[in-house]
Image (cartoon, rainbow, N blue to C red; front, side, top):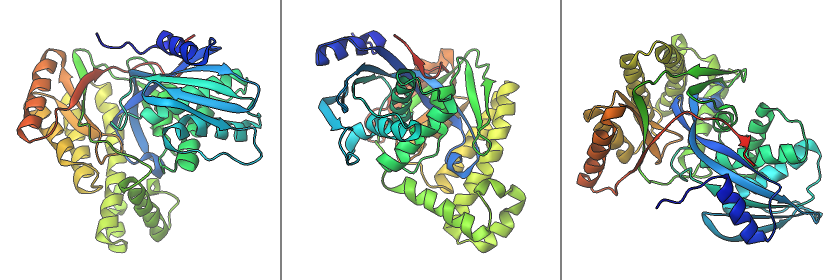
Length: 384
């Protein structure tokens, strides 16, 4: 029988580990991004949704400035003294929850009296479904309640991003945290990353489901290609003399191509055209135009594969094999260099598509992908 990860599970394990009951349990979801990749840190447009897989944070209060954190997915208890004179060194997986503690303390001016934290999650790690933002938002919304800090959901989302950028060292945007905070059932979140305007977009999926195909190729945003892509975008901003890549329109691409080297231009081209695809996808979902959605997903994946170069052969195979088996739309999702692809599949065809994708992976010599469907769900909340 599969293990049920929920608030009660987190509370029980907290009590078994620490010997007393938590003051509460809070949770936040992972997210799947329908379209709009690597546009968030370029002040662009994104269309993610919070998924029905969550990270639960059971928390108890201490009075000695010490924070202890443990997780169902990792062995041992990490202990850090926030009451010491010097800023503690945070590293490894615990930098995500402890980084939030540090950042919120700095933002609110609230001294860290101390906490015991137990985390439990069914959001796959390294799959492009933002397990990191789920951790950050679960801990942040808990501390906001416990400290009575009065932060808005946008404030909490930005605090999570700041922790990931400054403590973990991953140069990510804030799409993931906004999706985790603002998620709504049956809806995607249309986020303008320049104005920070958030609008729920009813998806009207009806008899269609979103299938996640996790290649199980693990990735990390703190190292490697993600940082180089962001650096290329920042370099293009300097050369073009604009504030952000959002200021470059499709009509300016010819001029842009003349001023940038070939690789940097392709990075810019992806971001500029992806913003247009996001706007068109919002309209297509509103009209339930699944043919248009399929075309937009295909163009987005091709752009990520060829211009931004963040796809992998396994991700390409997941997209191609799901479409060949009957999916109406498919693309890789998340930061790339591994992780997952998503497909929009008629409910009755989900088993057939899953089988076809698994067989294609086996034939290509890959380990079978982890496949499951997700539905748009509620954002961060207090559960107990």
